[in-house]
Amino acid sequence: MGLPSRTPPPIADLKFFSIVPIKNKKKITILFEKKVERKYKIFFKTPQWIKLFTMSVLSIPQVPTGITLAVMTPLTAQLFNMYYRKKKYTPNVLTTVYSSNETDILICPAVAESQAKKMKISFEKHMLHIWVHALMHATKKNHSPKNTAHELKIVKKVLTKYSHST
Image (cartoon, rainbow, N blue to C red; front, side, top):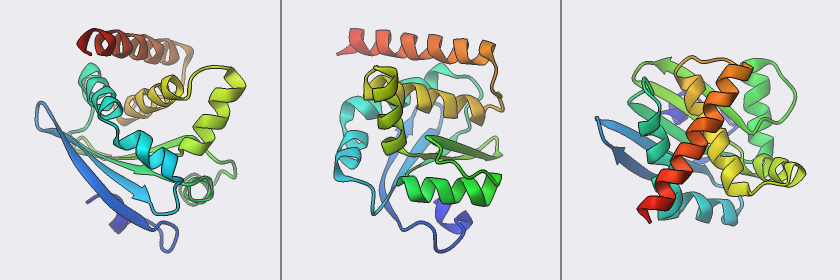
């Protein structure tokens, strides 16, 4: 089930939420750190958000078939960043690619919400961009202006598709 066997103990206390099957044998396993605020747990469990997740995965070729999404607190996200990347800041997202079949995405909605307020954009749109950004890393894409432009194009495409499907 992804993260628990690779998690450096005792950083995360994760609770399984769901497995979301997607076309082409792809799936997202969603886990929550038990201390994550309730409002974020509710957000990630909504059918609308799950649909945006799946539409994003289908919009990006070469996304691994098995994605484990762990929703983390800022402290845990920072500890993971220090443990895996030797960086001290608290990230909004971390992506670890193990193979073409397996990727872990650790997302910190509290950081994303703070960033969205500073940028004066909606939390939902920023979360979608962070998710797409993580998926791009899962396909081994690195940071660049060209990749950021591509991410924003995918976000716009997914939001347009979603608004037409509801």
